Length: 295
Image 1: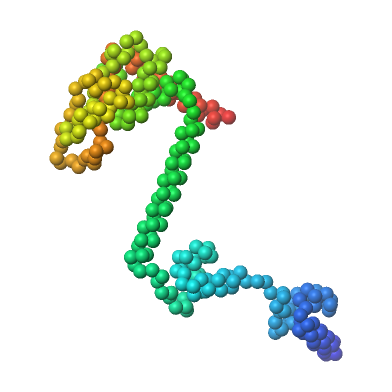
Image 2: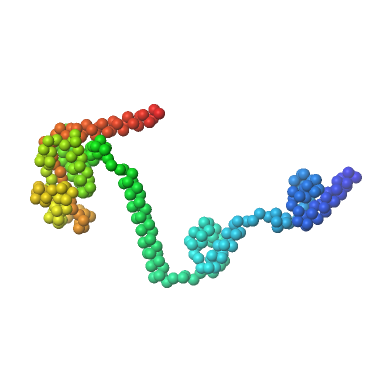
């Protein structure tokens, strides 16, 4: 009984000292070192009920954000703008400021719509600028093509857009059609490559416009004569496409120029070389892939 009473008395004495030190502004670590109490449970019991000194409290970042959110709300900001300013979720912002009055709108509905439209214009302009810059960098990265690179590009282009020979319909000749003037220029440049061009190639080349009958036919012929590098009189008779009233065409604007068809007679040998080169490209890609896998 005497031992228990002694221990209790010792605890009470320690508690009085610990409380006094706590009220002087000491931290738990400082009290521990002063009283030589290294048991955390006992240490916390000694100062139970005594608040920690202010200087030991860590600053609460959320409290600062809450006060900032409330201040911005008082200034008339919407939840969206506060979210942008503080980088917090709308749900948190709502909890912090929902007791405050909803700010009066700064603009009329017409002014607000005008501001939104102006913002959209700026956003689209910024995106257009970004697109243009991306394209410019990609264009400049290509540089000048070697004859071999141009040959492979031309073969791929023809195999994507040109007429192909079929087992049920032998058509071993070059016939190419496209609606992009730059593609036409590239194709003609490819035909002029050494090793592609055969004797009297240009003399065996026939070009004609293919277009819907309702379009501006003379205008289309003048348009295609420029990238083809020939006078309009050198074009063969234009092929007219009949209009089907049951279909809805979207290519009806003034920019619609139809397509240019380029046909090279007596080009069976060149067609065979194109087809062979295309399969060589396919096999070359496979070989490259297999080499990478083996590495």
